[in-house]
Amino acid sequence: MDSNLTAADKCLFILSNTNDGEKLSPRHLTLIQLVVNNLANEAGLNELQRVYEMVNNNNYTDWFYGIENLKKDHQGYIYWRNKYIEHFSYKDDYEGERLAAEKLASRCKHLESIGVEIDIDSVVFRWEEYESIQSTVN
Image (cartoon, rainbow, N blue to C red; front, top):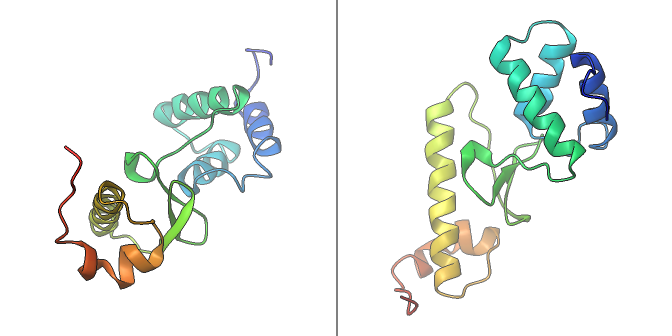
């Protein structure tokens, strides 16, 4: 793609290559809206460039709160390695949401270390059965 594209052109490219934004994280879809409405600041435009490059290189990923393997979709579903594990929405409580995301990731890492399949049952509903089991892997 031409490196002289306008911000709006980059937004159109990103949207057309992410199933009209369905494959974007909620924060990146919001960024697209800000850019199109001329409300993005310099940091936002820099992030748009980063997203554009990832999409252009077919390697777009946006980890939820920067936690590798954890993603959140537009409806609030949380995924670990693309497996559904939880659903939540913290309206304007970013710290609470971040802490909950870190807790989920910690649970998933523990479950993986003891060989338990990751799903909403093991991560949420039956967590107490697994939390005290020690990993045999060093």
